[in-house]
Length: 530
Image (cartoon, rainbow, N blue to C red; front, side):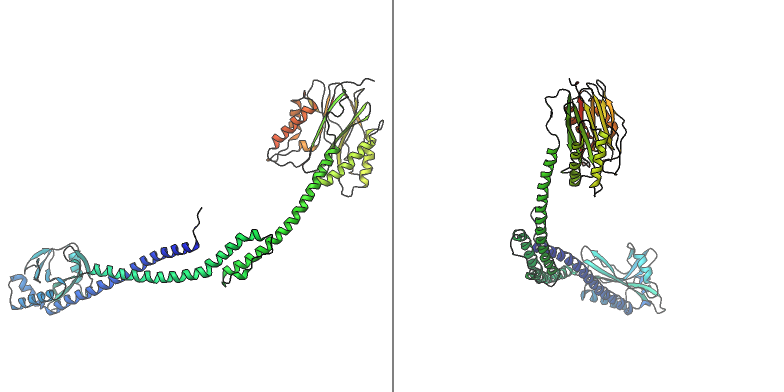
């Protein structure tokens, strides 16, 4: 998009202002000029009217109207009117007597066509009777009337009453004074005013433009150039200096702010570079931690390809780079398979470190012939000894006797598992949950057991599954989990877990993941031959 320069905007703005000023000044001065001219013509017209009214003997007029005869005095007055008409711009100079519905002429200057003779009757023009009623009042107002005649142009009309010796009005002197060239003079005057205003505005615009170019446009160009160069100069020692702009006004303050901004940007970039480097270092370390944590969890499936008695699959999706959830499965001996699903309080690196400790302790203490309640009791004591951060672990561990199908388990505050009997859908299996690990010293845990048959399956998970939240703050919940499990009972563990995860993702949508999501599924296929 092409941008207009400030100089052009200044010129255009001045031109627009000039047009407005010229129009306003011309209108104001023109109106004043016209009023002055009209006033001058009006005073002149009233002067003729008053002169005639004072000169004429009002006592003689009724006789002239009644008889229609002219005498020497009459002709003297007629000569007066004719002479006055010839020596001025008077178009009509006359005397008449007003009656109720008409007026009767007494004298009328007859140098031009259209003069009315003595005794000539004429109807009132529109508004004429009302004007005469005002003239016949005591001390009548001298109101000039302006009309435009097709032959004579603008005419100023004035009226003055003639009184008899008794002081009574008996007739009216009428004056129609031509205003020759008033339009021409008006336009000449307006043109002169316009030329004068244009000249003043043009000179003012030139002076202002020089001033603006030096004090406004120039400094702004300097700041504009400095802004364009600032990015390229950030890697050098070349800095913007405010003293290159010296206007003594807000533009100079802007230059000082620009110098301050340049310094602040350099300081920010320096700090940002350090922070970015530190973040990259931390990110690299977190990537390493993520890989280490992932390598600590069994990732190769099937994990025991030579064992036909069971099938197992597990997954863990951390909410952050590293998580506090973990799962594990391992052979306690040749006929016993142990599974572990646990959730450490909190997230991130602290939870991951505590997870490593808990996972290691549980696996180390799970030995052949050792009661699972004893395992958790011992692990709890060890975790409580070095738990300054007051973290805890919810955990579920189970050991399956592959020969008999007996499944012993211990639950430390963990989720209710789902069990699918052969040919039946998954159902939650209510078991008593003990206290969390590392929550309190001196806790004693008791193991429970159940009998599994070939074809049975166990699904265990962490609360990140049931407490997954969508954008409306709704929880995924046990009911939805049970429904998707029941609808996929025939799926193998490796097929089932991705289906559950896909359903969770569909429910959550665009909402962020707040907790680690861990799932494990064990299918008991056949008894172990002894």
